[in-house]
Length: 196
Image 1: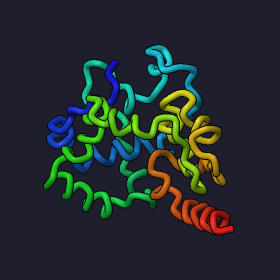
Image 2 (image 1 turned 90 degrees about the horizontal axis):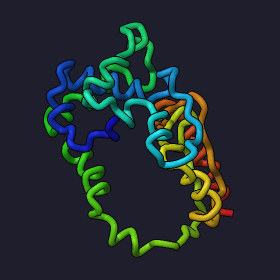
Image 3 (image 1 turned 45 degrees about the horizontal axis):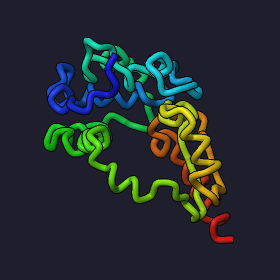
Image 4 (image 1 turned 120 degrees about the vertical axis):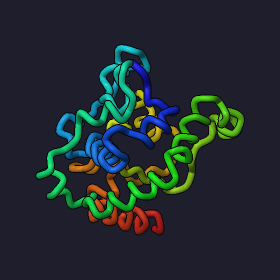
C-alpha cells in the first residue's frame, strides 16, 4: 500500500477518465455520500492501523489516485440529485484544474513530507493556541482520525479555550459544501460565544 501519492500531478491532470470525472469520483469518495465513510479512531500510527483507512488515503500499490477513485464513481442518478456539488459547479473546478493542473495543491504535501516545514513548526513546539477556538468537521470525514490522538490532543492540550468541537452528521471531508447551513450556524454560534 502507498500513502497519498503527492507526486500524482500527471496521473490526475491526465486521468484516463478526464479531469471532470476524476474530480467527481474523488469528491464523492471523500464525502458522506460514499456509504463506507464510517470513521473511527485508529489505535496507532502503524501499517496495520493505517491499512484500515479508505483507499483515498492508502492506495493499493498498483493504483494511482485516478484509478483508485474511478472505482467509486457515483451513478448518473446520484450525480443528478447531488445538491452540494452540482455538475455545473464541478465543471468550473474541472476547467480550472485542466488549465492550471494540480501542482499548487500538491506542493503542500510535498513540502510536508520532505521536512521543508520542520524548522518553522519547531518554533511553535510545545505552545498552545490560547484564543477562543472551534473545530468543525464532517462526522463521515476520516481526516479527523487519520493521525491517532491528534483530535483528542487538539481539544485537551493544543487549544486552551476550545469552545466548540463539532462533527457534523451528513458530511464528509467537504463539510462546508455538504452541510453549509449547519456550518454557518456553528460558526455564528462560535462567534457569539467567543465575544462573551
